[in-house]
Length: 534
Ligand SMILES: Cc1ncc(C[n+]2csc(CCOP(=O)(O)OP(=O)(O)O)c2C)c(N)n1
Ligand code: SF4
Image (cartoon, rainbow, N blue to C red; front, side, top):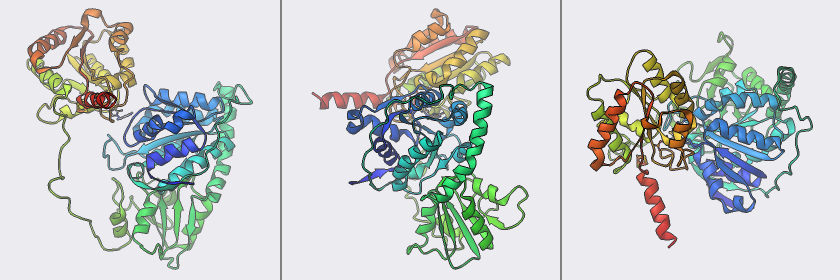
């Protein structure tokens, strides 16, 4: 079969298309976005009638995928690691409902926080939900694991978590494809109450899930993705998880590591391999990107017994992603540090694009707020979060998607009036609407700016579920019509926009101000495509 040069994300997408995928659901988030974008753009996927849709958030995307799995079809849902927090409720519960058609959950972690607000490790959530978790070492494995993941998902009737990290998602390698599989026909679960989590049913199915754990361990022990590679020097044994196996191998160009190595790409841990290496070797070094999950499991609570080295004892840094050089140092090899970063690319803080509508919104907001004390602007996550930096320095919080309106409500409840929330259009429909409803019910004195640039700009301009709907949503939720104010954020309208903001800041109730102007990047893209098609 043909070989293609693919990014990890693309390998997963192509793997899913070839493995009989019927539908892919997602909410964008770096570094997972390109998986869905690949399927959206794939002619092959279109010809096969594969459904590809962006959900309003990760929870809605997850539940849509679960619904497709219920019908017996193969499905995938993709998100970044913090998205799995948003989808945690259906994720954990779907371990108990089980799956019907093959169901793969892709969660893309971002160690070192290249573009994220934390560096949590999705393997921990996989373990928490008691689900098998796959972690590819390279792009070929990422591709192959999708086929395998669908197979074990259907064999055990459970969702399977596929955990990747930024380096895996965004680096490229040659990938050999397998012969494509046909999609499953609709075939509902034999037990039509399988997905009804009434306590009596859930209790039984939870027991079933617990019983399956032994089989999941056996699958890991027999999996072609996990390997015990013997080595003559038993002073040290190395457990290398996911991409860290590559970092280890890069330190041994002939791929001959003198120590025994257990390569881990499937969890729960392969018990026999772990027992073997911990019995044979004097010390263990655990290489894992993310949390010291395996290290903690092997060390045990009191850390007695065999010496285990890794992130917890300082052999490796406690946070941030690993790389071949960090692994070299942990093996007592020379610290090569790599090339110096040229000054022309070093330390460039991110900034809003020239002509971005957010410039005009923050200029106006800063001026409108001059008569109030500082520290009252709760922001959300999007391009507008850059207003935390000079020259605007407008915002005082960014915690998670949706937290702007709700935090402003809490601050207003505490007596901070007015409290201001700033949220983007995509984030508003992701998880801002419920917070707005809370404010309306409590008649909270909050001024909410919904920065409507008609897209999900920060992740590359995916469609926004809010497009064309924000005003009606606000009205429908109960914002008084005369306190829904639409602005055009342009320099020439500055004075007028400041005046409107001042008026609404003085209003002792819920007001929503909607500055509307398209993101210049999506506007340019649209124009380029328009002229190309002429
Ligand atoms: C739970 C979660 N999902 C996804 C993301 C990735 N992400 C960051 S901001 C954002 C949306 C930005 O769109 P919008 O609110 O419209 O603001 P814009 O960037 O367009 O200004 C996304 C998807 C995230 N940080 N957290
Ligand atoms: S991508 Fe769009 S929203 Fe983001 S900074 Fe640039 S113009 Fe503004």
